Image 1: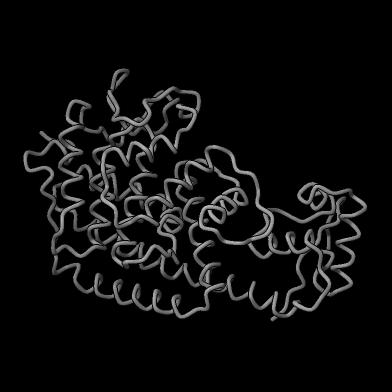
Image 2: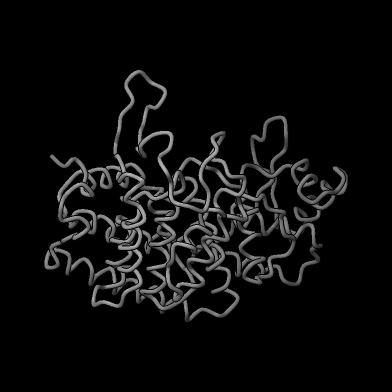
Length: 370
């Protein structure tokens, strides 16, 4: 008896109910087209800011799904530097941040290029620059070899009753499995590219060809496919951010699909719904972009130095925690006295305000305006 879909004799001949999906696919494609059209109608600076925000969210949330928390300023700075976007002072980035950003930008900015084994090996090496996943040494830039044990997705690893959610194909099958997948992915066919994104995501993560990083690479492949569906390298929404919100449902539908039949209609339906909700999340990106543009238009004539401008941009981009004078001094590499003087000037200009109930340290926030 086959437990997983890759053990069925018909694998990888995935099937689905096209009629059942037709209405939702049409709705998603219409909403996708409207969003892209609306974003492309923005002026270049606003569109550039929206792209930077969306890509930053995508990198952060795709890693967060796997339990890895990256520094937002480092991610944003790395993306801006690589895309040539001017954002003022750039934060130095760790190797792991640079690697994740490099993979995501290669997928979305070079979406027209074929997906090859060598390209995937490069992505994998970028994700694990030290050759380790946590404390464990892993095979980098090559398919897994299962030398230690079979590839399994397991929860409650350190309990007396670990749960096996999924067992991947044996390493001996990987060369043939990945050749079939890549030939299909790079082929021209009549399949709607959004459905192809969903199928590619599922198919890749089912093969699970690497020791680690399979989920992040599967989501990068899906993003690459969505870029192809729009014929644009500019990203205005984050599928990974929405998957992060729905992480439990994401894992549940993956497990259900991988243990089911080769009819993957339910997976495609969930993917389309998640994508539709990701488009709704793009409204938050737009709101933040317009808020920032309006802010600087309102305060354009005020005497603001470079340190103050950098801090204000950080607050507008979603500052982590509360702003204090000590944080200001540390971020801007200045003295406590200079930081407090800068803050007081911004208060006098009507830009910052002391927050109520700050406790032992005084906190500051942007003045809220309609």
